[in-house]
Length: 96
Figure 1: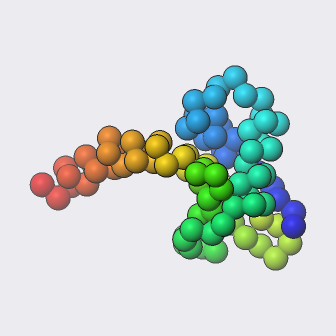
Figure 2: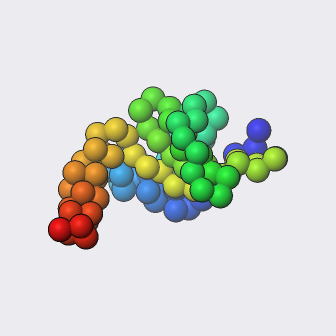
């Protein structure tokens, strides 16, 4: 299985894990691990999937010969913080 990683996914990994001093190769190897060993959590639009490994989630687009890691979603702690501080207030304003 061939795996490709976008520059956006590497940048998101560094930002959301707050490990800014990581090299691109270190971030890339972690994302490769998530893509190769992770399990599919849910399907996303346009033949993409959310994959999770060791509590870390990424979005992967699957083709016949190539899997592309599109973005990094973060670990469970980051994702719950994001829902609480960014997403819910946005919807509360919209439906208030």
